[in-house]
Structures are given as structure tokens and as C-alpha cells.
Length: 329
Image 1: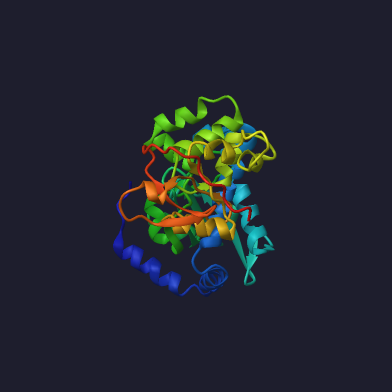
Image 2: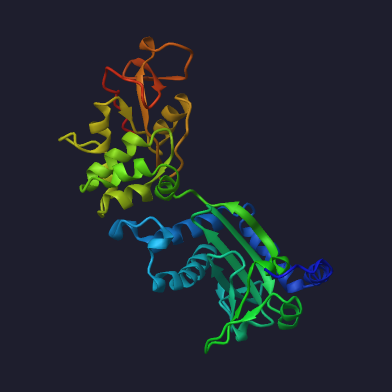
């Protein structure tokens, strides 16, 4: 890594403050998405789109082919434009506040590739790392002289003559959102922190059994529907959770083991909240092992279901009764 010249960095910061076009674009983007929550959702959905768990069963960026990783930048560009309705630029990707803006994505923080035609233009630089569960986005005026003077830009030896940035360029960026949390990839998290549980889930050949095992073993953690999609690997993946007459789907099968699976409906969210959470957001589930209040010791949060009060118990606690049925809505 090159050392940072802090006097040069201050000069660059001052010049950024005088860049009216860059500041206009910054202010507009922050008006559209003050907290960055919409931006983060686009990045989470784009990564999941690339993984395509429903058809491939993949959950890790490292499982992607090289061509798919290369395509990530294009998908980020397209999906941001769709979400925020950016106009097409004259020479760059977008026109924001009448200013041409080029969108650049990298899974390496600072590792953006700047083509010769983008020199002098404003770049929306975006980074997301599923392993770190973090993302950043900022604006960079791709000034060739400043980049060269900073000693931090290298020429990539290919026919495109692109310039590769790196981490020592970060002082050149006017950040919109920096090192923000990216919604956790649950299966990837299990791979790093609880491989035994992940292996137990994927040991099943049946998509239904994988979904059941997920909610059996991963309790009191929100589960995004994309996780269910990846494990079920079928078009109607949500059916793997719902009740059925045969009693083989997740809710009826696990009720026999004392486990309930609230979803994102209002009544289900109230049940999860009454049990002490976590509470599912849109498109999420959470499983709890429950037991009748009168059979448990201690003061615990409880909820009334089917005329009795129930409490959440620990994963390893034995329960002697089936769990109650959740409200239908």
C-alpha cells in the first residue's frame, strides 16, 4: 500500500468542496435516500440475483464464475437506475441533476476500474462485500492529474487502458455512505461461524427437508425468504413453509416438535414480539421453540395462542406438547 500524503489529501478535500457538480449530485442522492437503506437493498438483491440460489443452490460470492463476477458491475448499474429512475447520461451511465455520472462497482474496497473516457467525469463508486456484510458508496471526480499526483493509481496493462484504483485512493472519495451494514447472508454466516449446522441442513437431498432443518436448527434468527428459495430450489419456494394437508411442510412438521415459524404478517409479527423477538421484517421468518407457560419456571415473555399462554424456550430444552397453530393472517 502506498503511504497517504495527508497534505495532498487535504488539498483534494478542499477541491471536492469546490466541485459544484459533485456536490449537487451528492445532495440529490442523499435527498433520494437519506439513510442509504434503499441503496443497501439494491446491493443485497443484486448479489442474490447473481447467486441465483433458486436455480443453483449457491450462497457464496466465491461460488460464482469469473464471467458472473465481471457482470456484477453491470447489474449494479442497471438495478440502481431502475430503483432511482436515473436518466441516461450523454456519455456516462447516468444523468443526475444534469451531470453525467459513471457507475463503478467493485467487491474490493477502492478497487474500481476507471476507463480513459471517464477521466474528468464524476464516478459513483460502489463497494459491497457479502463476507464482511458491509457496503460503501461515494463520488469521485476522476481527475487524471490528481490521481497520478497522489501516487495511488496504476495503469492496467490491457487493451482497454483502464486505470485501477486501490485502497489508498479512498481519501479522494466524497462518501455518501461509508462502511454501512449489508443485510447478512445467513447461509454464508453459518459457513463461517457454524459449519456443523450448515452441513446438517445441506445433508438433505430434498428441498423440503432442507427448509425444515433450517427452521429446526436456526432459531431466534430472522431468515430472509431468499434463504428459503436457495434451500428449496423450486419456483413456489414459499410453499415449503406454509401449512399443507399432508403435514410435511415446515410449519406443520415442526409444530409437532414444539416449533412455530412466524412470518411477516401483522399478527405473526405480534407473536414474535410478544415472545421477545426477533421480529421478522418484510419477506422474513423466524422460528421459536415454545412451551406452555405453566410448565416453565421463571418470568418469561409470553403470548396467547389457542387459548393458552406460551413462552419461547431454549433450543436444547425438551418440550412435551406440540406447538399451537399460528393465526392464519
